[in-house]
Amino acid sequence: MAFDHRKFPEMVPHSFERICKEVKTGDLLLCSGTGSFSEIIKNVTESEFSHVGFIVRMNTIDRIFVFESVESTGVRPVVLRSYVNNYLGSGKGYPGRVMIARNAKFAECADVKKFVQFGADHFSYPFDEDEIMRIMGRIFASKLGLTHDEFKRDKEYICSEYVFEAFKAVGIHYAHDPRGFILPSDFPRDPDTFPVAVVAVEQ
Image (cartoon, rainbow, N blue to C red; front, side):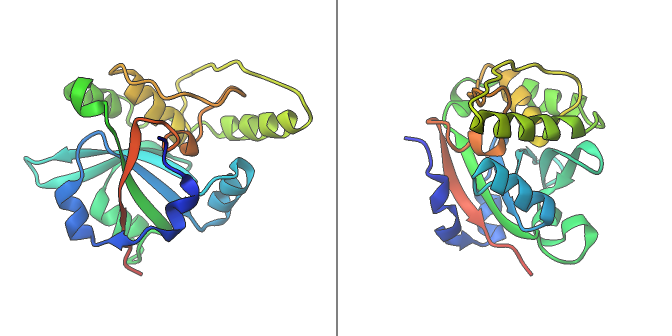
């Protein structure tokens, strides 16, 4: 059964140190930001989630990374500890709530090396600003009874498209929205994806 995103705000957070012992490469990082752009995404998509990335453990250097696509820089890696507790070098924690989730099929069938290679090979690819407007347009059009189910990909990525393509590269397919796009909230709705823990963010 898919995770009910409405339960996210009530989930009890766990310490970062505990989370570090549990997270694995291929885990999802799902965020509920409090910034203006994040609030717009949550309101328009009627979801608790505004952003998604994925986890890569690099034990040789004792670091855990988030691979993600963001408006300011496009596709990038960032150290998870900094992401959670020193967001953008601000000395403050991520502005919002953060959850780690896991796809049950990943450990069984995914080629981890290929998965990480896909993520790294797309570093510096640009963020798809136009796609945000297209998504909003399709959502509002659907409320008027208009449909658009074409799902095309290019070499620019919003956060959810980047994660979608990384999992697709290793044979794991997340269902995209029938209106022709993929949202952060589509990942926790997947029946094979379940929450691992909410991360306690230092403020």
